[in-house]
Length: 130
Image (cartoon, rainbow, N blue to C red):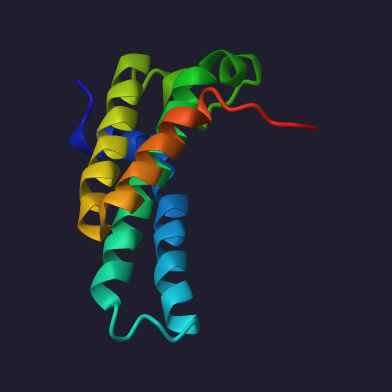
């Protein structure tokens, strides 16, 4: 039986929590450096929480789609490769995190929420000119 600590470690690895946390911190830092944080702190904190869930969801969906590449490259730092998390669980985490990001972003306004929703949906189908 897998312990709670092992499951937590696998979840943190899947979502690259440390990277996601620093992404959240960068939103707060940008507000402080632009001198807009004070007076708009609630919006910046809300945006920071939205960003952490977007990062966590993006890392999870990346592992979901790239599992064969990760296996071929012997990426033992990926929980899907090691079997610590199933692909289905990774997909559920990704959808859950992105849904939370979208719902929390509603507090920032409809335009922001629509942008986040459209941006995440279009990532899979975007065309990049090289």
